[in-house]
Image (tube, rainbow, N blue to C red; front, side, top):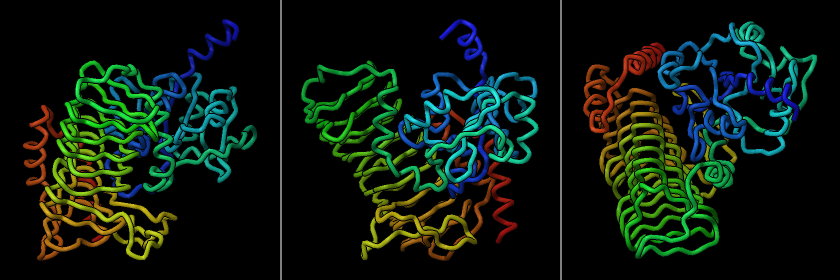
Length: 418
C-alpha cells in the first residue's frame, strides 16, 4: 500500500449506525442494536476490532441518543456534518464473516455494500452525505448507483445472536489481548487442544476443570473461578466476574463484566453486572445488564414436544417462529426474579420487570411490570430508582439522568399501549 492510500485510510472515520430495522425485544429497549452483546464482545466492539479502528461516531434513534452519548464519550452522535471521509457500518452486522470483512475493508469512496435482502451493510461516503441520508434510515436505495452485494447476514431478532455463537466466541477470543497460558495454576486440570487465555489478574482455584475440546477459554482481568467448577470452551469470563463453586458453564457461554454466576449455564450470554449467583439452569439464554436472578431461577429451553419455539417479542404482537428447537429466555436490563422462579421456553421479559409470582409467568412480560400472584402492575418509577441506586452502589455506580429518562420514556410508552 502506498503512502497516499495509507494516509487516506488513516483519515477515514468509522461511523456505526442503528438502522432500526431489527427487532430485538427487550435487548434494545434501552440501547441501540450495536450495543447488544453477541459474544465476548458487543457488536460495536467487534466491528471496531475487525476493521482495526475505533468508531468516531454513531447514528441512533432519538430515544437512545442520550445513553449513547454517555456510553461513548468523545464520539459524536447523530451529527457527522463536519466529518469528511466516512466508513458507515450497520451496527447489526455480526462482523464474523471473512468475505464480508474483506468487502467492507475494500470499499472505495462512493461505494456501498448491501446484503442479499437489500439492507445497507456499509458505505464509504462523507459526513454531509451521511447526514442527509440519515433521516431516511440509511437505506440501501441511497447508494443504488454504486453498490455491491454480500451474503453476510445482519442480526434481525434476538435469537439470531445465538446462531453461530460458539464460532463467534472463538473468533472474539482470538482478537483479545489476553496471553495464552501454558502453565496452569496448581490443582487445575484440563482436556482439549484449544487455547486457554488468562489475564495476569485472573484467578483459577484448585479443582477447577477446563475442557477446551470444542473451543478456547478466556478469563479477563479480575475474573475469578472458584473450586469444583467446570468450564467448557468456547467460554469467556469477563473482567471482575465471579464463577461460584460447583458451577458448570457448558460450551458457548459469555459472561460480562462484574457478573456473578452459579449453577448451570449453556450457550448463554450474561451482560455486564448481572447475577445468577445460585443454583438453577439457563440454556440458550440472553440476559441483559444488571439483572438479578434469585436462587433456583430456572428456565426451559426445550419444549416437551421437541418442536419449534415460538416467541412473542412485543406485548401486543403475535408469536413469531424462531426456527430453533432450543431457546431459553430473553431478559432485558434490570430484570429481577424471586427465588424459585421458573420461566417457560422462549420467555421474553422486558426491561426492569420484577417477577415474584409462584407459578410460571406469561411467555411475555412487558417492561416495567411488577408481577405477583395477584397479577401484573406497572412499576413505580420512584421505587425503581431507589432500588437501582442501592443495587448499583454496590458496584460503585449509580443510575444516571440519561438512564432514568430512558426508563421514564419506556414507562410512558408502556402506559400508552396498555
